[in-house]
Image 1 (cartoon, helix red, strand yellow):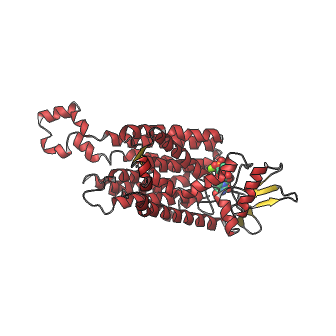
Image 2 (image 1 turned 90 degrees about the vertical axis):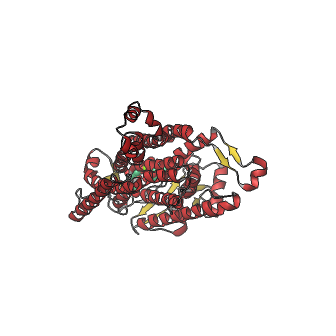
Image 3 (image 1 turned 45 degrees about the vertical axis):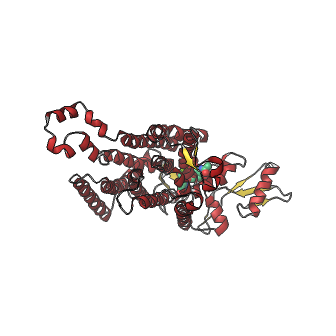
Length: 461
Ligand code: UD1
Ligand code: MG
């Protein structure tokens, strides 16, 4: 891969960055419009990660962070773990962005701003010095934001560790749980709602609210474990990790906008949490677009586990601290299906090869479902289950003359897609799966905001 930017690329990135810096500088003149600043920061994040992915490719390869693209005719090695570059740019941007959403509050809680005309009054100066105006500052919001950064940082550490050392599955599963502790504590102290709304038909039995108590925290930790791992197992073809994440990010964005638009007064009570969600999401979209450009077919870099974990955790943190974790599940439907479908292999009921990505057929240049072969006959009930799935078109198996299952396609939605629609070129496979993800998400949002009225008395939008 060429490691330098072309002239046009350099010029475009420089002008984009200049425009973004101009916009950011401008926001200081008004109230520090945080949403506009966040958009501009996302533009900067895009340019920075675009350039760094290109410049650092060789450095990563030299350090041994490289992988072989298994679905190409010529065996090529390309840089792996490029998601780490994006994650670090993203975290830096989140950190630099901290003053912006709080600009108004900082001005109000310290000297200047709202108190400009009175700032020299002696008693006010004293109040400021003794910090008594600090109660006006929304410490809870800042804590939320900081805990998000902390949780994301921990998950990036896990991702890089996994890319370097191939951590075992049982450890991988636990680390996101630890990473979610800062955010869960803040949720506990700041929001603390652990009740769920009961659908209208069940209300005579359970009342209108049902308090899950500490189970609710387990549920949120489960989301934080699920989201990163689910993206990592829906992977293995060029572009799919980033395109599914971008698709989910845009769907969350759409959901946020439903609450924010039109900018009506009085604003919707959930405005603040959906703004918070946007501040976390926009820079993520920026860095992901830069990565997609390099990872799309034919890939010039791999994203690595770092990106998969990081992307999943961005969604989990966003959903939990933005108070829309149940909607998030609806947007993750293909990932949930892929996980449930993968379960027999993940829990070793059926042997699981190291790689389950589709098989490249060098003669046709197309991808075909990859298979797991069984040297020893599997237990009877498992064989029966597999035959049932086969008859439902949810798996393709091969039997020997005695009726023993000797081979089956691997249990991933990517392979299932190829079973259904036949061999496909890698880019077409990635695009069709992303379109499927988008359709599922849109149906999910429709259910959330329209059909919800049938089972709940009101849509909280
Ligand atoms: C997960 C999947 C595994 C899948 C792998 C591919 C489970 C339990 N694990 O493992 O089945 O094969 O992701 O990402 O479902 N690669 C390509 N083309 C791509 C992307 C990756 O050939 O577009 C190959 C490269 O050799 C790359 C490697 O996959 O180096 C990365 O695999 P890794 O992320 O380490 O696999 P896991 O996350 O452990
Ligand atoms: Mg992976």
